[in-house]
Amino acid sequence: MKIHYVIALLVAVAVPLAAEESHLLGLGIQHDAAYLGAAKEKYLPFPLIDWEADKFFARSGKGIEEAGVHWRLNNGFSLGSQLAVELGRNSDDSVFLQQLKMRDINYGVSLGVHLEHSTHIGPAPLNTLIRLRQRSGSERGALADIRVELGVFGTDTLGLQTYLQATWANQQAMMSDFGIKPANAAYVDIPAYSPDAGIRDTVIGLAGKIDLNRDWMVVSAIEHKQLRGDAAVSPITEQKNTNTFTLGTIYRF
Image 1: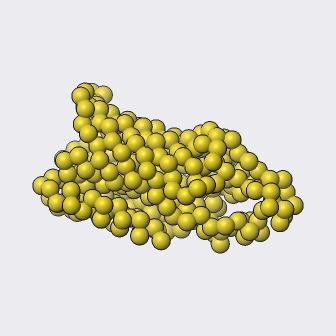
Image 2: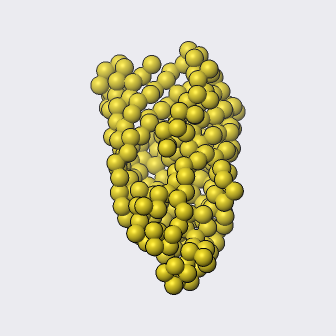
């Protein structure tokens, strides 16, 4: 279950988070595809975390739920490592996957490194994140992300930002998520499919927050994700475009 990995991330940083820093913690509901490329959609509870103490952090606002350490460098740069939750896939969510007798892909974790840069374009905050992550499991492979966030509007109580993200996958990761082995392909008499490494998906989104008072805020985000390259043309991809919506509340410590 996903919640087990979220709890593991929180436990991993529980001691550092006791420091006197600014913390945000809440819960949201997310409407998303059942798995990457699925036509079926689901509503799922979603942890909202932005918690930092000294060099330790836990957050959910950068595309994945992650926790780790980072070191502030000069000129707005920071370098760090992270442990992150990685999504899985339930074959019961697709008739075609059941026909292929594809095994479920369990939720897991990844271990990686990241480089982040924060600056401003005029009054607008600009953040760029480059992240590398190796997923757990002998067949899950490695991913790389580039994410850019730009603040587009802000007042004392209201904030809006837009963001872009692209994710690349090595051949092992592509095969894990979108490939079809010969043994599975034989069940429905189609050719096996072995995708190459390359860009996996792109995301464009808009996120906002409204401060209700000093302690509480409401947050929301809407994004459009599009599968790219060999992921988009995989026989098991039922829908290459997905719209995701998240709504939640956050308590500020």
